Length: 217
Ligand SMILES: Nc1ncnc2c1ncn2[C@@H]1O[C@H](COP(=O)(O)OP(=O)(O)OP(=O)(O)O)[C@@H](O)[C@H]1O
Ligand SMILES: [Mg+2]
Image (cartoon, rainbow, N blue to C red; front, side):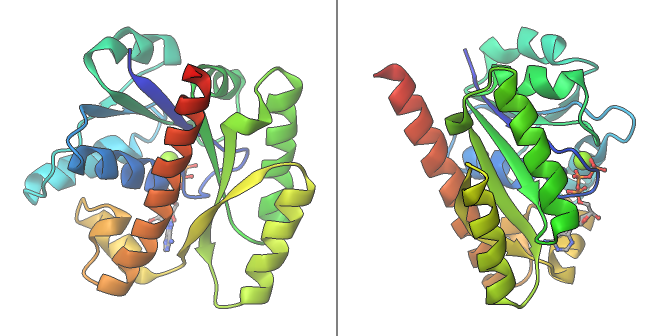
């Protein structure tokens, strides 16, 4: 049975698809049999990204399939080592189902309270409805130049009772341009941006390893 990593949010446009593609690409590069389950059928962002990836002949292959529900995605899970669940734009009942099924659920957020507050409310709702907080991990995306702002955001999330992964994605045109070419955040034309994304991807991989090791114990 595949490991499941969910990427969800309360608000739209926070970076779910960007993170989902970065994580999937990382495992694909390591030789895992992976698939992105694009559960955002209204937009199909990751599905369309894969089409660009194929057109531009970018390797490794990162297969993406659209599924109307989590249950449909789970039906194909036995064929993979890892399914990355790219969640719908806004939190729905399906979001809870994703978090309940996933070994790790990633909550991307920007640094403003406008972004942090709804994402923390979603995390509270998920834990209230039975998802262990240890299976949730916040990641900081679209981060600006201020270390103070980033530290404040990390402190806010920690105080709320959640872990924030090491690393972050800065707000950079280079990430958008890479996405336009069907590339992941670790595959931009800029080594410094790739290194930033690599650090974050590694933090995700480490957390997935920790969670699955603890569950096996
Ligand atoms: N670090 C970044 N720097 C610059 N642009 C970014 C960054 N991360 C994401 N973006 C851009 O922000 C937009 C939203 O990102 P993305 O599609 O990953 O969010 P999402 O949460 O999946 O959105 P939706 O809720 O619509 O599914 C995209 O245009 C993406 O290219
Ligand atoms: Mg998306």
